[in-house]
Image 1: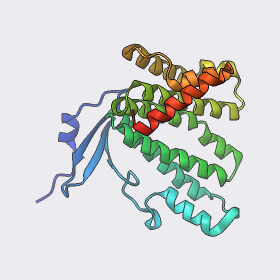
Image 2: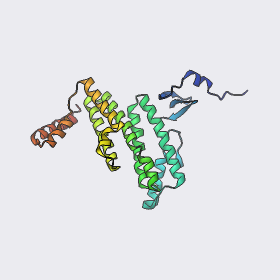
Image 3: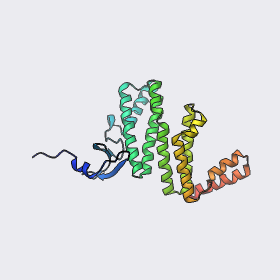
Length: 248
């Protein structure tokens, strides 16, 4: 007797919507949690921990971990070869796919974890890139990954700590994206008009409006320092330290 190997029932029961990220968590037959994403003409299935395809390159948890161990052994002369560049790109794509699933499912801490992996991997491959063109082809995506991480961090903080922490998470993300653009020698006007920057500004202001929130303590502190109001700045630092200690 032949076993059915098609996925007709899955596809019929889970409609594909162009332009939307449709994701769900399921349980495998062995009980482990899996992530699925509906794509045109199919379904992607991803592991929720480690590398999304479940592979362990040369026994390492991820290809990043494997390359890191190689670089430690070979020292400062280590450079990625063509095959390693291709495998690195595979892992970048897999973590991107899982990251957008986590965001769609509002699993914000998990999205942050995967964004952090990609950003650390980008730092690593930049240090041992075979050439500047390959580096540039990856660095162009750094602001987008930071944008995803900032969205996730802000919404996680909103759930866990409240609107002020969410606004500060957005401010931290904006600063990181700005630094990326400055390092790429992008002028101030283009930075302000950047779509990712605008969307984070919109997120921040929507939080302020919804929760009737004015300036955060950190924003007040920055203004006080800029205005050289040092006594006020000292009081604000003390209040920030008090809240941090008390967990308020």
